[in-house]
Length: 102
Image (cartoon, rainbow, N blue to C red; front, side, top):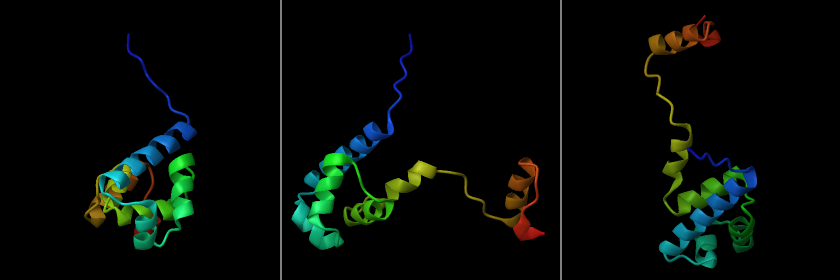
């Protein structure tokens, strides 16, 4: 039997926070040092690591400070459109022509 685990938003937040904390610790950075390099207050970093609560902007800044922002792009890994023709074909597949190219 196949088991599928569905995570609540809070579980996902805590998983992300825990993964972030582990990465921070592996790089040898204290919250204070990360705070100094990122400009994000240590209390905000603590709140994020403890609760998973963080704004997207703050998360991006923190990830950049750990040189990990590139992983965010994997969340939305879509095929890149490299030409006008490709863009028009994508829009036609959805049944409409792009307003930008009319």
